[in-house]
Image 1 (cartoon, rainbow, N blue to C red):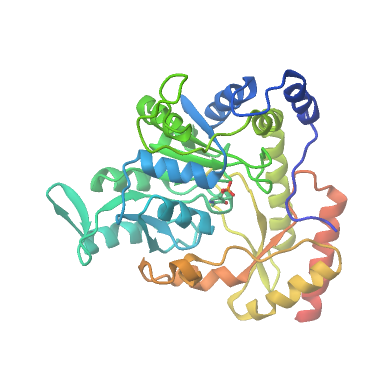
Image 2 (spheres, helix red, strand yellow):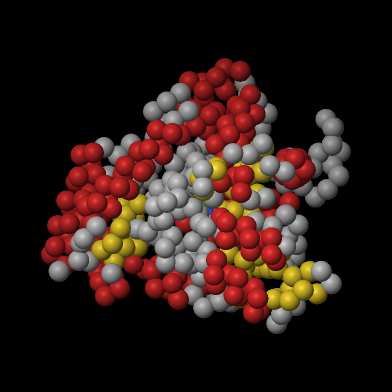
Length: 383
Ligand SMILES: *Cc1c(COP(=O)(O)O)cnc(C)c1O
């Protein structure tokens, strides 16, 4: 089987893990945690990064640090992984689902501004949803597929409406916008180091920020809000720390960040070239002028051909190719079906037409040829 997206442990992973065992530093203190935080901050373009136990935890604590509270609203694209919405729920708030744009499948900034103008009002200095009276507490754009969204539009809207930008860049470490690493362009940027991401710690996450106070607060609440060395705690905290073992793996992975990003881009370019003029499918979208990180790549079906997708996936799997559909949007998920939502035309139009293809950084040229040939063959029989 050619897998969809698996870890590539080609560097110092085993050596650093061995060092954890030899030094007995396997838990939440240790040299690798500090080193990992420095390296993530450097890759994100921020002064600080706090290492945590998952991307979901990173999103949760970023929202808490941004001041999101019970029964408030956080704006999020409907087309995202369910963890974005779960983190909002964990903070006690509710997702407000908005549509994505056609160019990068990221939060539609034009629609976002129109919706905020039409559906919110300022009450005693707070932005409130007109109909429910709920406070709108944050904006959470998502770097879909590793695509960079229009940061300048998003920053303008955030400033205009007084909303903090908490970015779900779970799979987008290394992305840039207008020559700037993305972490510097938002209050808080969250990453995941789950096994299917470009850089993995086995499991893990991080929040990157340039704000000294927010970084210190997140570190504090992630470590049971402990004060000093004894059993003294000043808040309701969380146990969301990353372990030294996970960070050791992550440190070795980050030594290969540039190589991995280059490889991801090559894989994406090759699929795009192979299917650029195919009658049934199109390459997945991204705005070429931005530095995207091509986390997941593949193709999506033309509107009138999408019904064949499940069958195509079955046939690919039967022939040893780990192809998959992509995210089922939030409004179609049981816990989020009743959330406040805008019209979701673009999300509804694309979500069940996406075919994600093998894109591990360890994918060989020969394997990718085999994926392309097999898919071309299967699609040929469908025409
Ligand atoms: C992977 C991912 C997450 C969740 O990260 P975990 O580390 O699995 O908790 C959140 N949002 C997006 C967009 C992701 O791709």
